[in-house]
Amino acid sequence: MAPDETGSDQADAGGDDAAKLDAWQRPVTSDPKAFAVAYARAIWTYDTSIHSFWDWRDAVSVFADPTDPPEGPRVARSLLPYPEQFEQLQLHDAKASVSGLTVDVTPELKAMEKDPRAPAGWHGYLVRGAQSTQMDGRTSTAPRQATVAVVCSPDCRFWSASSESPQ
Image (tube, rainbow, N blue to C red; front, side, top):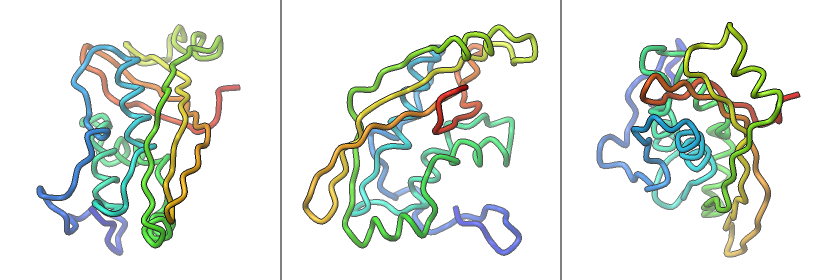
């Protein structure tokens, strides 16, 4: 999907036969940790030689709460690069994968989970991993982390994410 002049989402080229990576699969689960890890894997994995920015964007959007359009998908996509940044990655035939994913619950996230204002089934995690990126035939590895919140009641759905640790 691509934004039109009004900012709404319209169907974009790519369609059902667009390349989907295994790492982009949204799990149907009631395990909030598994869902948070799957979301992190989806945002940190790409291959510019087989998919477009819009394919990646659509794949990450399915993690969102389906009852919260259009805000849910927008928030789920918030940790992806901008289309112009993806174009730069394409120029270098870039691809990335993530390994060593770990999930932690910080004291701040534990407190937020117990906050009566939190939705029922809310869980927050600090997800970390090592992203290996291949560009122009060279490989580099960089640490990644995101704070990911999900709501499971009983099946999990994305609630929010930030690339910073909770304070």
